[in-house]
Length: 110
Image 1: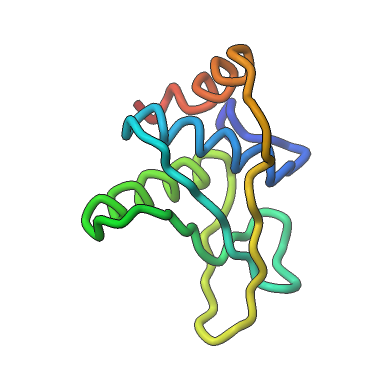
Image 2: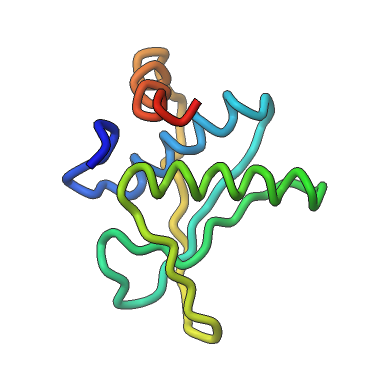
């Protein structure tokens, strides 16, 4: 288990932290959301969805975001044809302390 892993499995906080990490790495306003299957285990994600127009950049960002989620102990487990629901990051401003804490969770990935 990596130090950044959240034992409580707070998916929205983890998503927010991954988004902070990705925005820092790729320098820009990047929106990430998750799709989960109904009945997924707490550590399962069906798809990581990145809202970036350029296809090549989107693929790079998605691969890095998926690596960040795996680092936190999640499994990317898509089941083609199965229904999914969206998980969005929490809205609102993020404090400087939260940014530092989020980036520290992914220090081993840099």
